[in-house]
Length: 102
Image (tube, rainbow, N blue to C red; front, side, top):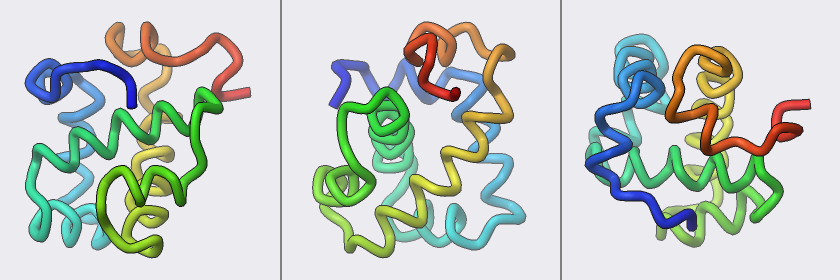
């Protein structure tokens, strides 16, 4: 996992977008309710690692210590938000490889 403080992540526009999405996306809402914001921030970092080609979604689930289903579901949801936030969050832009979303 990328060496990033989860408190730093919680202050990003992308994490705020994930929290906002929890209001209408059941998988994010369920993950947040069960695991909390700290684990949700960790899921964001692991999703970025996946997009940067560092690990698979199953590996992300293992790192998160959740079932493969829960890990893949949350990374899928976060990935959609990352694509939408690309170019609109300076923190996110520094985390992604230049070709990560190609």
